[in-house]
Amino acid sequence: MTQTDRYYAAACQLDMPNPTHRNEIGARVDRMLQMVTHAVTGYEPFFDVRLVVFPEFAHAAPVYPKVEQLLDKLAIPIPNEHTDRYIAKAKKLGVYIQTGTFLELDEKWPGHVFNTTCLIGPEGIVSKYRKVHTWTPWEVHTSPHDISGYDQSLFPVSDTEIGRIGTAICYDWLFPEAIRQLALGGAEVLVRVSAYMDPWGTAQPMDWWTTVNRVRALENMAYVVAANQAAGVTNYPPFSWPGGSMIVDFDGRILSQADPGPHEKIVVGPIDLASLRAERKRRGGHLMQGHLRTEAYGGYQKPIYPAGKGDSGPITVELNAESTQLGREALEERSGDGS
Image 1 (tube, rainbow, N blue to C red):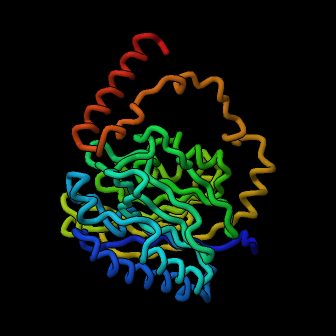
Image 2 (image 1 turned 45 degrees about the horizontal axis):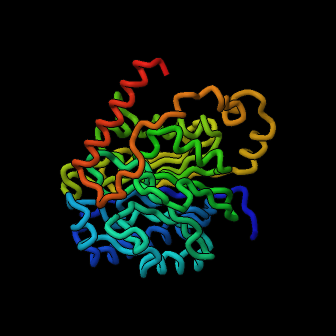
Image 3 (image 1 turned 90 degrees about the vertical axis):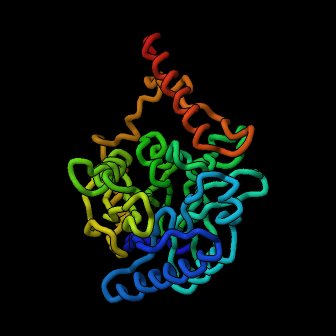
């Protein structure tokens, strides 16, 4: 493996109609493969783009309210014909592609749909991440946390020639615990694959998108490459998504960012792993991961949101609401006993 410690990443945002059937996915992949070529070859005289990231729901969104409908209309297995095309493109251009999410079916877990993104390189599918923190109550795809006995890593980190890469999806990023798992796994580049809608986007006073990306970068001392959907309400009712895709350095500095608003865009920014690695070795202050007082965090010793809720069947909006109520009651119980 030839290591590269300085390169550029491209975050690509999309504005395409919401697909209603899996037979529409191929045309979307056509466009994303074009964008990979644009990012890599178009910027070649200026930047060495080695990582290209796409947003959540790039291939399909959970537009139907029930899992049975998603399985019938939109869900597909991984690997598939589309991942094969990404692999061919990655091999041809010598790049890594973080795919937008697929609605994934897996014969090992019948009756469930996962919201899944793949890191793909010249060597093939490097890793697969399934969204852990689904956007309750509306998302009815399954979190690995919903399945007792789930036997794969919830937060995989991949050791690649462009650094150690960890990925999480959209709502996952509102949980510092989730991104910390990637950092503790050695991630140097944290990839956010997102469909973060208005009003929690780039505009004050609710600029959660920008704020959270910067905070996760600095608290984990890692680069963040964040690709957000930028589809208008016409394409993805009832939501509109503000884009604002961005690259952030390990001190929380915004290195580049797409201007807000519904539109397709490619934004590129530098990744300097040599600088990151030197600072991780040198710093004695603000080395947050090295200063974690794990024994002090007693609040994590008791469960809140229930695990294994998908064991009895598909996830539903009603089941999500019930689980949220159980989580609320667990919080109230904690406050009553002082834990």
